[in-house]
Amino acid sequence: MITESTLTQAPWTPHLEAMDAAVTTNNASAAVLAWRHAYSAALDQPGWHGLVEVAGAALHIGAIPGFKKAAESRARESYWTALFRARRQGSLNGVLDAAEAFGTLGDRVMVEQCIRIAERLVVLTGDSDAADRVRSLALDLAQRYVAVERPDVSGFATLRR
Image (cartoon, rainbow, N blue to C red; front, side, top):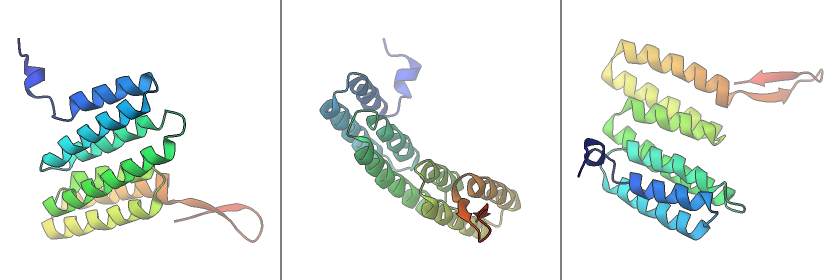
């Protein structure tokens, strides 16, 4: 019997479930293969959402010893693709999701780039509510991911934005 949740399941979801099962048993080759299938399924879809989801899932592979850097690299590349799609589609939500994702990777430069893209999208739409939302989220993202500690001349740490 097919249930409604089966009908609405994203095409990459079963692959991510298989990947998570492989990660729990430290089966790196099965996890990477399942992730690649999920990534292909997300690429086949026209939007950005699946790529963000699959990119985040790539980080789970980093739990397997020796795979952290490769998992982060796969996630970063997938977030890039999602960002480009979101920008092309004029999706403010997609750009801001990408900014958040790059922030979790510690990529301050990309967080700043995403904020600039979001600001340009708001200018194109002329939506004042969206402009307020971007300003608020940009401030939050900047505080969490862009501000870095830098020692000043007196030896006390100061924040630079």
